Image (cartoon, rainbow, N blue to C red; front, side, top):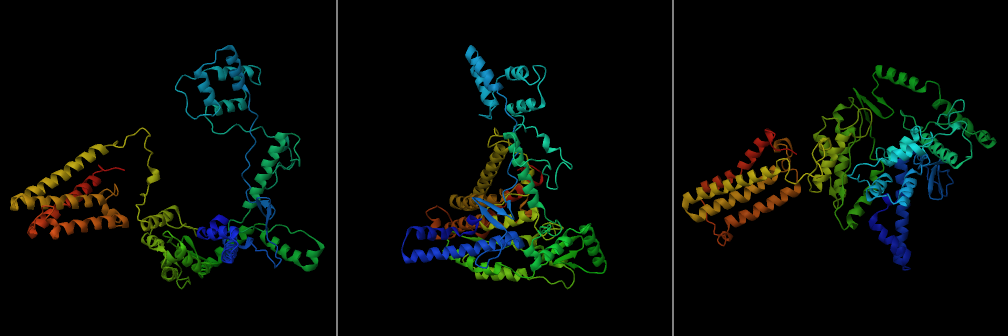
Length: 547
């Protein structure tokens, strides 16, 4: 988390502070450390809510504890869930058959290629016919004495042949299912010993403990998004202070039989009475919208953002994501109170002039009629995230990928750059521009000679290429998308058009051999530039232009 919270620009000051004894550098280091501590407190509080308590000189009991390089939350490693099931002992078939055949001088380069493939030293499967010695040797050396191979041995053969990415899992120990009940509520075997009798037992114990810790971390109320209270520990001090009874009351409330059902019944009853707000959540027809009362910590972070924009040597982009309560304000119950996020976003934008603004709210508002937020959750959907992404990409001056891109089949690796008719389309489009330029030249030639013809051909060829740049943005019609949504393309085409106009309408036309045309000549030349737009729109409508 430290890498995410510390301003990269300020790390320079920290390095100087560690290696420089000057008072200025020491002050810079102290400032960095202070701001880093504040950022960590805010970051932990935002991510962990009520579960995080900053423990300092106030003596508060923080639920986090460092043990070596691992962070523990209420005694549970936050990295729980990373221990895999133990792998079954690997048979020595491959090395044995290789040694026997090498000793007999019958081991070939083809055998060695298949050996490397079986042992996963390479993922490239040999193109030669697969040898039979793997199956033969596995059968003869198998645990069934040459009759058949076991399921476990068959699993190793599948792994060797790359039919399975994972090595076979070892057989679970007897104690894993011998208890009554077999497991506790966290999935840990009730008869699991504290210490394994064998190395394999120890591996299974580590796996089950890890899975149990993961289950404990996930033990949260889906309705309230918080850890339900467990049975408090009884001690004389907690009983005297009253702390035990307070926690015990919370435990009874959280673990009351049928708790979720009773809470659901209460909510439905209140909804029938006309209530539309439940614990900061509005009931809006078939969906829930969370209430936002203020900007929270974003207000205190505004100064950090402003300073970041001042110090950064590269452009910094800022985009704040409004909640559904802002984008779907019209869906809120009549008279519902909600923080004016639009006005706040404008205030942030004005307060941070050094940052490039990303109008995510505007992008979402354009698609407010779509499912951009989940029906019963405050997060945006994948579609909403896509529209936010398009706002960011356009702010960066790039072209966003089109919707449905991930639904397209990948192109084969051996496919050439001009495959799928691209080469033919390039040739036809080139012929179209050549024809337009020749037609424009001929019309100018008829009007007054070589110079007018050259001028009209120059205008048509130059401007039609700019039109084609917009045509090629997408296989979809320009009228189905934001035709001028690419800021970088707009600037480039605008600059090109400006330069062309300077050459055509100023004395700079003389070195180019251009002439002054009558108004009808300019209209004709520029009119021909729109032919590619008409042709490409028709081709897209006919399905001739594909992604």
